[in-house]
Length: 179
Image (cartoon, rainbow, N blue to C red; front, top):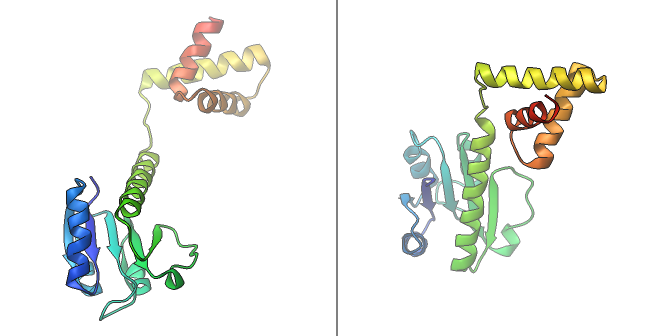
């Protein structure tokens, strides 16, 4: 589970949001009432979601957002007037009054987004045998269909994406069909 940091200027709001999350099975890593506390607390976490209000005693959410390291997303809870459309990556806004089901659905969506980004960042390293299969499949496509190496590779990639399988499986399928 992704670490969650709750930060609101009022302790009552922190407790209320924390209660909703704990009852729903989320693990709240840190609870804070100032932006500085958030920044001190996240040191060493690596990634997480900061659920916060619009204004703290020491800074606005924008400043906090600017100081967040890579790997962190922000869920801003603010009035509809302060929750205007923002074209900022990793910032999601929920309007007040906050509804528990909206909070939970939004967190679930943000966690899914984290997982997708993590998977995308992890580049698949192929074994020597898998590389050989891909090269053989490309060679076969080049020979049979008179394609360049780039065209054969793009063909493999496209078939892989269209069928929802990885490149190695697509290469194996082509080798089994034409060999």
